[in-house]
Image 1 (cartoon, helix red, strand yellow):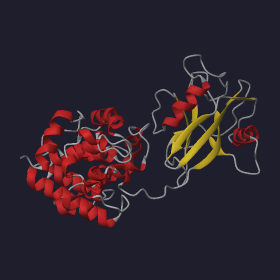
Image 2 (image 1 turned 90 degrees about the horizontal axis):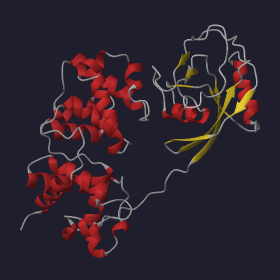
Image 3 (image 1 turned 90 degrees about the vertical axis):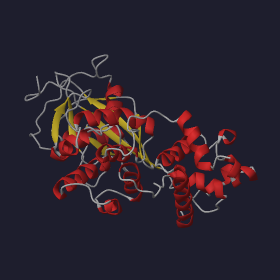
Image 4 (image 1 turned 180 degrees about the horizontal axis):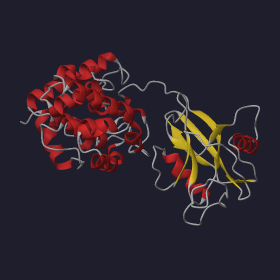
Length: 364
């Protein structure tokens, strides 16, 4: 009778998701690093088009290391978690300075590489046998063993690592680790697991107990924080929009967006906050309220109320390094998907958007 690794691989070879980073083993470490960094906190199906565009722009480690950090971050625009782009850039520069990749056991010493990414690189590129412990593998282990611990508990990580090593020993290929990842994504799901379709159900204690969703224990989640912001949408005659670079230490730091300001108690009037924001930039004029947009950043839920500045608004603000005019559809700077949401609220493009601001020094 085939062992669990053989059953798992048979299932995987029929059901594997065809992602562009799934190349023959051993894989190119640079391309694998890009994929693993992008896959942090982001679903694989969403990553695939970003991954391909990113590699078209930066096909080699040397190309990425030579690029300005802002250009690297710009190619993460819309993917979120932009700190990943900065750490990826720093890691590639470190690798270039040291003349290559360290031994597999030292990969975690590189800036920005946690235990999972280091294990994935070692297994997929350098012949390592240590399993990359992602949420899928941990959840599968918890159910196979009926492990009562929370998902991130040290005891569960230890037992999941032992399980992964045993499967690798039987299979003799790191493909078994990707099989576990896909099994967790497609079958052994957090909610509504498809146990009858699982190639490992015969040795799964949670399935035998009839309580797969009981495992692993779910820890208390961080409460959601709701925030109210305003944005000022200032459009030039050419259709460019005024963007500001978000300051360090604040939400969306380093990204270019329309001027934003939080609405804090006791200031309960978003319009008044937007008017003061416009004045602080050197603009004055009527404000047109636009539809509010929603945007999520980890546990924060933002409601952003945009206001378009009327056509009579004169521009008197001096030029600043953290302020520039950009086309909202094709910005040449790192930004967030919040920009496209605000552009949609403003009707930019399809209907021409709010009236243009006629100001000295605007782009033509």
